[in-house]
Length: 142
Image 1 (cartoon, rainbow, N blue to C red):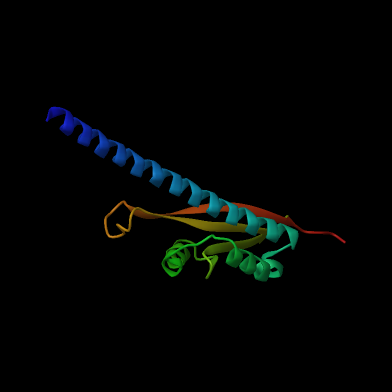
Image 2 (tube, rainbow, N blue to C red):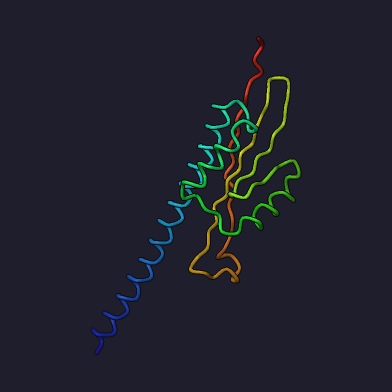
């Protein structure tokens, strides 16, 4: 009987570690997606020399890739309260634009939502991580 109890305990222990490993891999993959979305937005802003010129292309790109923020309105509202100069959009990204003597500057923020097994109501098991990047468009003297 002692060996049967030990075997069941080891199986439970292995399942717990397997669940932790799968959660870690899922968070890492979602972080990579959010980071990739941020880099794509920065690339389009640089390529088309400003956010106003590239907004439609960014929206179509993010619609086609699998970057997804589940509670977009909540995340955007929270971020807008903390950063009143930021403009947040439906597809889960925020842009903060400011100008200085060297040109136009943009701070791009995408979000990583971490939810463990649908336990959204439990404290600490659901949170959002902002991923920021900055791009500078220099003024061209013609």
